[in-house]
Amino acid sequence: MFKGFWRLEHRRDGQVIGVQHVRNTITDTGLAAIFDTFFRHGTTSPAWYMGLIGPGTTVDASDTLASHAGWTEYNQTRASWAPTATTARVLEGTGSFTVTTAGTVSGFFLTDKISGASGTLWCAALMDDRTVAVGDVLSLKYQVTG
View 1 (cartoon, rainbow, N blue to C red):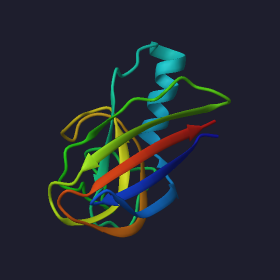
View 2 (view 1 turned 45 degrees about the vertical axis):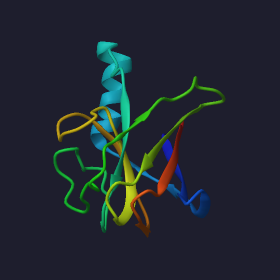
View 3 (view 1 turned 90 degrees about the vertical axis):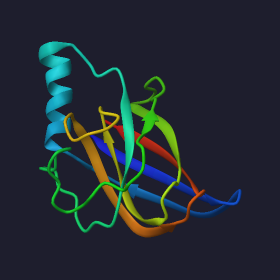
């Protein structure tokens, strides 16, 4: 069984003002992409991106990048996620955002597209709402285990 975990470190003016750890929901399309890649096609996406979720209430395994009724994408450029080599059944990588629009961040997602609504939504997770200001840095680590 695949499990995913997010770690957020929120900095303002160089000081850590919050840390959160949350589990995510791996989507049906994310699992299908893994199964198709490994067992059927053998091709992979060359890049993955982290995105921020604005105010949201639910994530669901049926969510796709184009359709996710319980949440909206936060107005921020997606960040590259470059995982390190798998060790002890764990794959993890990091990414960070420098906030350009003040507001509320409620979670995170991982996709194979740098922008737009087409592509694979691997997972999504909600956390406690976090108010962010312009210039804040959100450092994320995403880890998936199997």
